Image (cartoon, rainbow, N blue to C red; front, side, top):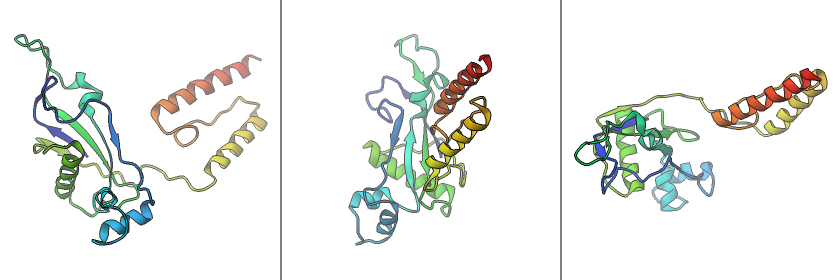
Length: 199
């Protein structure tokens, strides 16, 4: 979910969020299987924090402070009178779903729940967004089954034995989880294959 809030100043005494990339919400201490039922039961097991964080209808996993990550996208030129940059908008991305079920709620309901939760997390009431977009990317992040790492090891051994190190397998879920991990693995694979070809 992308949220866009009204104009704020980079030097404001009360910015919408603290500096930084954002935050992730940790896995519930007793696991998702315990946390989800506890969120449904008023007097069920789990702490009050687990019940709040494990709202199965919302499933908030984390928030990215987009404006802090790429402020150049949102800044006007420096204000000539104050010498400070003005930010036209404050943008946040809320990540929802994962092991929780949030597909049943309407977009407007999800926005309402996210704003309420973010207000608690950020310790301040949030203004209504001037724009929001909810992207429903179902089954977009794979969950690896038991033995995944061992199977990747077998695949790498088979490629090494069959191709002598001239063929590699890289990508998300093979040796890392981020774009940076994929780039790093691709570069390393290119160097290693290049060295094999030159032999």
